[in-house]
Image 1 (tube, rainbow, N blue to C red):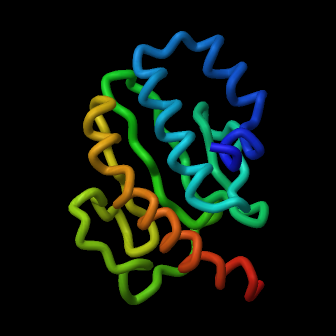
Image 2: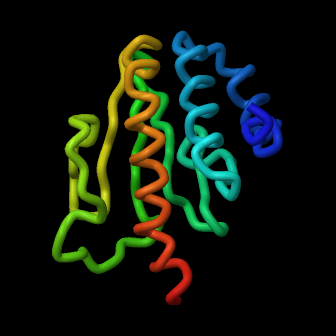
Length: 139
């Protein structure tokens, strides 16, 4: 829990407070899960939702609209990059819907689906960060 509190961005909290989102508890659980996955993940607002960076590069964004579900968008940043030949990570969790080899989405409708997926989600986050880290380091 300490990692989460250390990396918690108060601007994101204020943004969410002002929204009065019906899935606020679910958003908070996703925030906690992402920030606890790796100490070096930072949080900000981008694309009208909480966004998570590794070494200053956007990697995961929570899509909070429409407010009927939440989606975690796993990506490699703002700029379109050449597609890798294969998917960025191997994943058999059943959580990810792949849009391209470097972009996947995990969708959640309620707190129970997030709770049940937390361990798998933390593993996906860590593997995503490791897989995209080389792109950051090799610039």
